[in-house]
Image 1 (cartoon, one colour):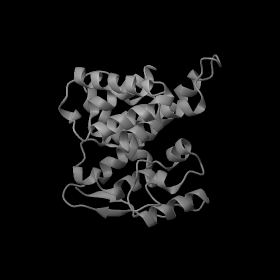
Image 2 (cartoon, helix red, strand yellow; image 1 turned 60 degrees about the vertical axis):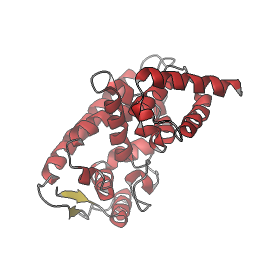
Image 3 (cartoon, one colour; image 1 turned 90 degrees about the horizontal axis):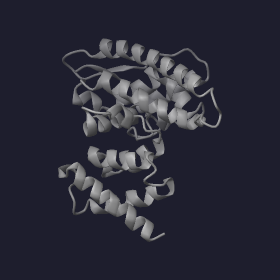
Image 4 (cartoon, helix red, strand yellow; image 1 turned 120 degrees about the vertical axis):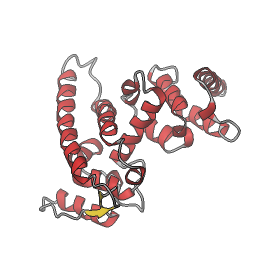
Length: 247
C-alpha cells in the first residue's frame, strides 16, 4: 500500500522550520506499492483535526467550573489524548500492517499532519522524539504512535464494551512506562486490569511502578495472553498485596 513517509532527518528539519515560522517545505516521500492510501489518510486527518478542536473546546468548558472539581491542565491533556486516541485508531486501523509498522509513516503523521497537536500535547519546546524524530526509530514518546497503540490495546481488551473509557484513562506516564514500553502491552487483558486498578485507586500511584515490575518478572514463566479475566485479576491482586507487604 502506497503511503506518505518522512525520514528522521526530514522530520527534524520540518519541525525546526515550523517552529521558526518558516514556510513548510514538502519533504514527504512515497513508500510502498499497490493501492494508494495517501488521499484517504489526508482526508481522515482533516477530520481528526476537527475532532481535536471539538474535544479541546468541550474539555475547556468542563474545566472552567468549580476549581475543586476541575482537573489539572496536565490531567485534562492526558484525558484528551486518550479520547482522541480512539478517533485516531478507528481512522487508521484498516491500513496495511506494512504502513502501520513503517517508522516513516508515524513521523509523517506527527510532523506533517499533527504538528500543532503534538506541540500542544507535549509542549512547544518538546523534544524531537515527540515527532518520531531525533532517534533511529520512533519510540513511545512519538505522540501518534503511542496514541494508536493505546487505543488498540483498549479495543483488544474490551472491543464490545467500554474500550473508549479504558483508552481515556488519564495516565500517559502509566501507559507509556508500564504498558507500552514493557511487555505488559502484549496482553490487553492484563493492561486493562492494571490501568483500571490504578484509575479506581485500588493501586496507589506510588505503588504502580513496583506492581508493574513484579508483573514483568512473572512473564518469564507465565503467558498472560492465554489467561482469562479471573486469572488476570487474581494475579494482579497477589502482586498488589506482595508490594504492600514490603512497604
